[in-house]
Length: 241
Image (cartoon, rainbow, N blue to C red; front, side):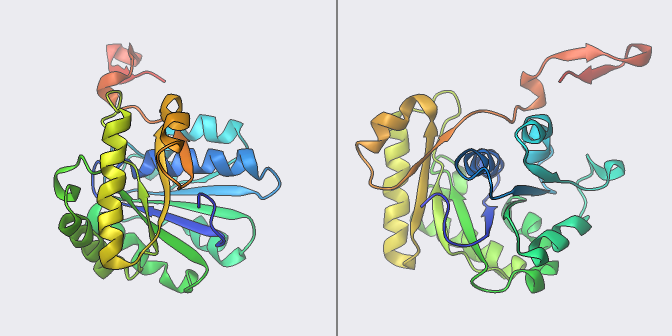
């Protein structure tokens, strides 16, 4: 199910899985459907400099979602900088918290320092699977990525999110192929497929083919090469907003 019974959802996945986009869209889903709950999203993605939940900070703030970020001095750093505010949110036990964790085992290291704030049963750790990525095109690949992340993070996965996509070229058949891959993986691991994602225009059609809940995905995170550029002081080219 999209929400789950726990008060913390962790989104982890290998590079290119789309886990940051899923985390952001999930946070919007939570605040839209449970407006009195109080939703926070913590950006702990220290690996990918392009697709991180902090890139949607303006939209998140306007929606009333509390975005927890590193100190502004380190906003664009790709270093293992822990966010002090994350621990207090996790220990507080109020509201709903979304954790956007960096890709692969390298980015998952940050969780190792937060395990005391994440007792078993208080969270669900979801592996975001994109069947179109090189290392998660087979059940063996999905399981291997999960083992690598678990070993470093000291967090055990509790389920899957099927986020198979080809960005703007995503179609129904493509998504269904990803769902089939995750189901084959389920047969081995026994972990549930919590929900499937799809572009908003494909949601209704997809719901006719899968029993799982479907999270509509809107594009909030855009790589620099697709964003407008402007000239700042001294003629320096900077990314537009």
